[in-house]
Length: 273
Image (cartoon, rainbow, N blue to C red; front, side):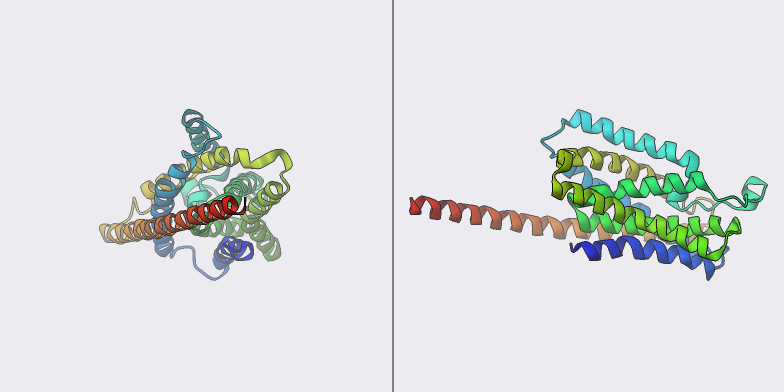
């Protein structure tokens, strides 16, 4: 995928959904919950279908060690949520939920944990599965950015400050991708050997976020919404499965082409000698 297109896919939906809080009433969150259900199902599906099989094909790290990194990513996300208050999976805290108003201070802990989380998600994009991973990250950042925008508005910050803060959050994943790509291209520290470990950490993060979304979204709503939630979940799984089948066939054809090209090259080389 073209790097500019990848950056736009990562930046624009997150920034636009954050800005949307200025125009959408916070009470109308049923549609947001449907997006959450869809994103949770899609994120879980691409993790199981694409990311886990790929990372365990690594020859740099043993499967047992990769399992430790997956577990570390899961626990790391659990730790980050102590500061982010669950915004990564679209959890919007209200005044009545905690019995007090939000502080008028800038939410430094929330921003730091969210930005670190987003930055880490962008790093594996320099290695593999850019399309599926980028779409998964982009979709799951939509409710996260909306929740962040809601909290920023509740702190009564200036509008320009809120916009800049949302832009910073939206830029963190592209920044993680660009930094990782630059380091990889320059072979500084040979970061390629660490991509499988970084991917394993992101897999752990995705497993935590996606399962939390699926358990939480719509859990206190009426049965009618739960039917809509199931449709959203099935749609997320279906799209991920469709991309899995399409990309699998494409990769297989590509591998055959590369093998034939290599074979022809070897024959030509032997004939020249």
